[in-house]
Length: 297
Image 1 (cartoon, rainbow, N blue to C red):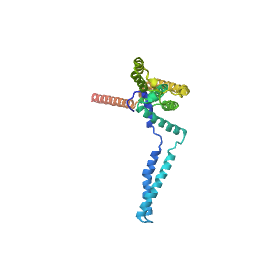
Image 2 (image 1 turned 30 degrees about the vertical axis):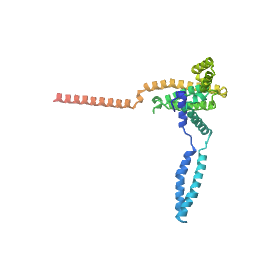
Image 3 (image 1 turned 90 degrees about the vertical axis):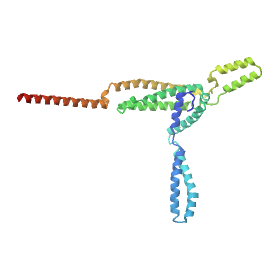
Image 4 (image 1 turned 135 degrees about the horizontal axis):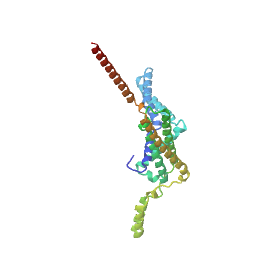
């Protein structure tokens, strides 16, 4: 996703959203248009040539049946691709916004066209979202013999983390726009002053451009004050969940480390040790029997 290092965790979330492709019209149209239509055309030609000449059958199949089947495929695919419930509608909306923002990020424009406070909230939320997801995918949480209540907690935590990050993203989706000014505008203004021989003012302006905070050239969203508090709450909930999962992970790892009986290798070794003891015992008994036989002789 480009070379920019701005908002790295949030960009990882965007990449995840882009990869989670919703049901789309093109897929269904490809199935209908590229698979069903040729079969229908071939079948119509096969049936028609028994009633009319092969040439006429080919013309009818190609000029009438094929366009009709393509039109039917387009209508059906459009209907099938429509969201079936609010959750699917939200997924489609997130996917579209994520693609738009990824395009901005690839052009190194996202950090300028996204309100900086909204960007901080999204980056913080994405950091804790990623930490939770990564932690719950570690071997300690993915063990087959993990107790059922831990598995249930793992799945619920992953879902809750994903849901909260999705909500945060959609809550702040309208906090983008074109900045009121750019660094280029200020540089142009400074050079114009040089041209007008306003040397001191031009030098001061260039210094301000060079040392000024980049956020002064970012977009300031009028929507942010309305959504700031709920967005901050979601970011804090993601932090709290991530910290709790980190703490619980240590507990899970401790239980695994203190329960070696759960390892299949332990049982195998125990069986081998028992078998070795049995063989040694049998050899000792055999040796005793032989000694007794020699004494009697």
